[in-house]
Amino acid sequence: MAKQVPYLLVEQVEKTFIRNGIANNVLSDINVAIEAGEYVSIIGHSGCGKSTLLNIIAGLTPATTGAVLLENKEVNDPGPDRAVVFQNHSLLPWLTVYDNVRMAVDKVFSGRKSKAERHDWTMHKLDLVHMVHARDRRPGEISGGMKQRVGIARALAMEPKILLLDEPFGALDALTRAHLQDSVMQIHATLKNTMIMITHDVDEAVLLSDRIIMMTNGPSATIGEILEVNLPRPRRRLELVSNATYIKAREAVLKFLYERHAFVEAA
Amino acid sequence: MSRPALRAVETVSPPEPLAAATAEVIQLAPRAAASTLGWLKPKAVAFATSVVPPLLMVALLLLIWEILCSGSNASLPPPSRVWKEASDLILDPFFVNGSQDIGLGWRVLTSLQRVAIGFGLSAIVGILVGTLVGQSTWAMRGLDPIFQVLRTVPPLAWLPISLAAFRDANPSAIFVIFITAIWPILINTSVGIRNIPQDYRNVSAVLRLNQFEFFWKIMLPSAAPYIFTGLRIGVGLAWLAIVAAEMLTGGVGIGFFIWDAWNSSKLPDIIIALVYIGLVGFILDRLIAALATVVTRGTAAN
Image (cartoon, rainbow over all chains, first blue to last red; front, top):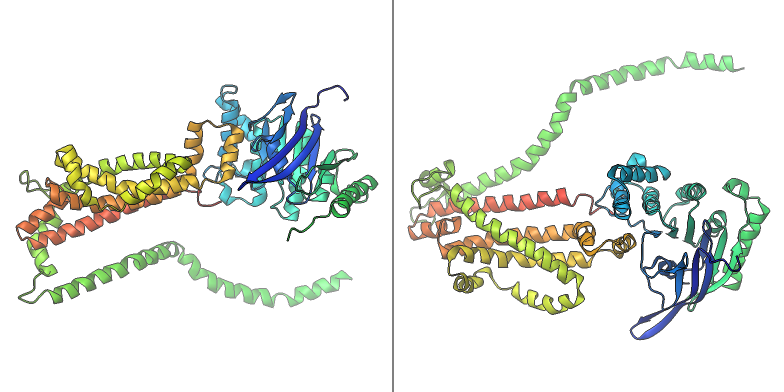
């Protein structure tokens, strides 16, 4: 790994927002390399700039200094190679479930796939998230968990090099969340995607990730520690409850978040 | 061990289900018989509750009007006289007895044609300019104050200047429609465009939609509820303006008919024309509302 170029490289990224002439340094000195097929979580207290970091990787927010390199090429603009699963699903309410995914497929594969192929591709992605049965429904008519499934299907349909998940399960109840986490693990096992997920849930981070990036508190937040989770896959949540490695990893994250970088309430 | 218990249940249970069964049969039988009628009944009731009250009110108002205007020195005709003198206008809206003596249906259609052209133009221009103003902060800063001033100008105040510019009655009337209807469409569209959620913009950025795709696939559907509100207000204003404009420009429209009837003191004709105008305005409003529910279905739900 010493000389080889990593799949995704975030190098010396720094972000300063300037609002009303006051500079606010959100992120500083972010350096991280991510390999192909890795599942990486970013965890930290709210306001630590983890969403900003994800947006910089996605290209939705420009970095003030530093660069993001994907396969050794600098990326500055958003694009379907870094598909995003948004926290609040961001489905277009006037389109059906199928059309929401199909729109992405049509745009990304126009000219590369025939109409029939694009239809099959759309159906396949809906099948991956078990949403074929609701293909003709509109986002307003399905539950929050189902919407997020469609959001994941839409992102997967772009055949991204990296899948970026911005607190994908944040707005869901605990049972739905567990269900979706299992689905995402299954998809990761099948497609071997590279995934970067933002979360503030310690169990979720340990359960899903190969590595956990722990962020210090802002302003000028940076990567405090990176924890390797050496648990074999497939992982089953029930078996992990008493697993020593799991418990240790969980403890390490909790200690980082609540002992060394406890959240300071900003009045 | 379980057998006695089972038996006990068996021996105890028969009377109860029997009683329940007989009770249920009595309850179910009329329900089954009324199933076809039961399907019709709520619809009939809904129809009756929405149609009967307004009909009753109309009858009551006609009665009051009849009583108020039945005196010998009443200045306005009572409904009975309106019916006696102008029933031909109601019963046969599409007669043609000469170039100026035609049924009210034809006149309404002529006016509607002008409204269609003027309103169609204002819808196209309003949505396009509204999109521009909603998209660009600078266009908004520069144009919004101008629009806010222009939209308060009454429709008829535009008429002399458009007559001077077009030197013809028909395009002037259409221009008055256009300039009256465009402001609500334009302003509502720009508000709708400005309110497109950042989420949708992010989606289109990730998908790398070009400007044209963004306009058709994100902007218009997202702003559609706002645009249709503007269109509905606009079509109402257009119909208000055409009647006033036609009174002054002449021609064949329903507005000129009123003016003509006034000049020849045919008050019953004017009253019938008012009813026509009101009903057509109501239908126009309903049409746009119905179109809105078809086009924007699902948009409101998030």
